[in-house]
Length: 442
Ligand code: FAD
Ligand code: SF4
Image (cartoon, rainbow, N blue to C red; front, side):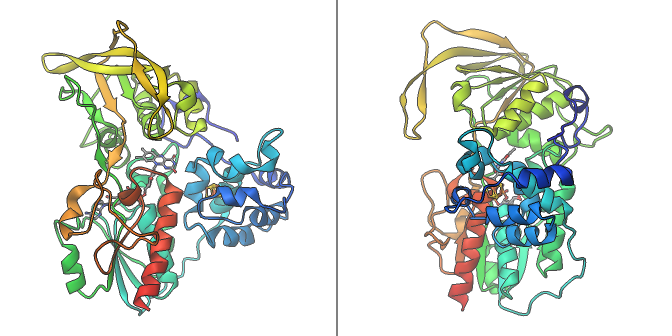
C-alpha cells in the first residue's frame, strides 16, 4: 500500500495510507485460493463472505463486491482501514501459512471507497419508532439494520458530529472524517433521522423517550470515561487523558491555526499505554511538533495496537520504552517537568492471559517531559445509569446475548457493554440488538 512519506506526513493530518489502485486490488484479490472451509470468514466477527467478495473484485465487479460486504458490515470504508485484520480475518487466511495473507482489509477499503451511495433520499419508514442513543459504530449499525426492516429510527448524539470514536477519537490521518460523513449520509438517505447535541440522561431521560412514543431504546453510548493511574502528580498542568487530547484535536481541530480551543503546547511528550489509543495520541503529538516517547509496561510482543499503526509510529520518529512503568509525574510550579518510572519484567500470566509486569527493585529513573498523556483504557459513561438497568463492576451495561438489558424495551451494545473493544465488535453487537428489537416488537 503506498503511504505518505514519513518526513512529510509528520507535518500534516492527511491520510497516511493512500489506498490500492484498481490493478493492485484485482491482483491482490486473485491471490485468494478459495479454500473450501473459508477460514477467513470465521476470523471476521461479523462473518463477511470474504472469498465471495474477493472473487468479484478479481473479476472487476466492484459494486457486486460492495453488496456482498454490506450484507454483514455497514461501515466497510471504516473497517477496511481500522479493523485489526492481523488478529482477525487475515490471521486465518491459508495464504498466510507460507507467506503473506491476502490483504483483505485493504481490498475491502478499495471496494468501499469506489462505491458511491445513491443520493436518493427515502422518507423515514412508517413503522414502530426506536431511539438509538449514541452514533458510534454500535448505534449506526443498529440504526441501519432497523431502518432496513421498516422501523422509524432516531439517533440521538451528545456531540455535534456523528460517528462516535470514528470522528472524535481516531485521527483523520488514519480515517478521514469525510469517509465517516458519507456513511452517516447513507443512513440518512435510508430514512434514519439524526439529532445532535442531545445528551440523553441530561436533556431527555430514557423514560421520557418512551413517553414520546419510542417503543424501544438502544444504548450505544460507548466507553468514554478515561482511566488514570492514581500516581502522584497526575493532577498537574500538562497531564491529559488521551480521550481529551484526541477529542480536542479530531473534533475541535485544535491543530488548525487560530483554533478557538488550542491544545497545550509541548516539546517533550510522553504517552503512557500501548493500544491504538496510545499510538493515535503519540502520532498526533508528533504532528503538533513534540518529541514523543511511548512508555509501555509490557514488552513489544504484547503491544495491543494494530501492527501497522505501531510501525507507522516508529517511522514517524516516535520512541518506545518497553517494560517501563510510571510511578510519579514530576512537577515544577504545578506543571509537568518529568516522569519517574521503574523498569519491569514479565511474571506469571494475569486474568487476561497476558504476563503480568513486575517492578524491578532499584530500577527507578526519570524521563524529561512537559506533557504526559494517559492512554490506559476507558470505562462506560455513567450518565445513563440512573435509568435503572443492571451494570457490572466496571460500570458496563449487563445484557443477554442479543443485547437485552434488565429493563424491558431497553437494549445495549458496543463498548458500553464490553468496555473498550473494536469497531467491528461494536457493529456486530448493534446489529444483533436490532434483530432482537425487531423480534420483540413483532
Ligand atoms: P463509541 O464509538 O464510543 O460511540 C458512542 C457515542 O455515544 C459517542 O458518539 C458519544 O458521544 C455518544 N454518547 C455517549 N453518551 C451519550 C448520551 N448520554 N447521549 C447521547 N449520546 C451519547 N477499534 C478498532 O477496531 N480499530 C482501531 O484502530 C481503533 N482505534 C481506536 C482509537 C481510539 C483513539 C479509540 C478511542 C478507540 C479505537 N478503537 C479502535 C475502538 C473503537 O473505536 C471502539 O471500540 C468503537 O468505536 C466502539 O463503538 P461504540 O459505538 O460502542 O461507541
Ligand atoms: Fe476483516 Fe474487519 Fe472486513 Fe471482517 S470487517 S473482513 S475482520 S476487515
